[in-house]
Image (cartoon, rainbow, N blue to C red; front, top):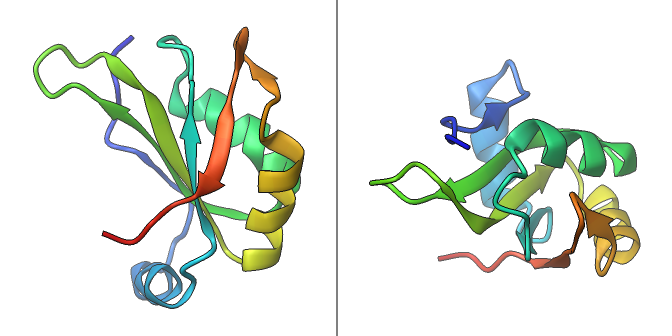
Length: 105
């Protein structure tokens, strides 16, 4: 699998930056991903729980292969909280995933 540059769903870059800066609990870390899970699969699974700003699967910069984790950014803390509760421990592409709030860093 080769990774893309990330799925961006917002047409307004200013709004996206503002939401990212002001919504510390709207970004989720998703661990335990299958190395075959791509951003489309992640977006489709997590999109059931609310409106998403962006999805990113983290990849090795040399091989281009997934490192097995990624991030999902929601437009609201409510949607992120719902997704965290409903997706943590669930199976995605044959793997039980772990979902936590992402830390700013």
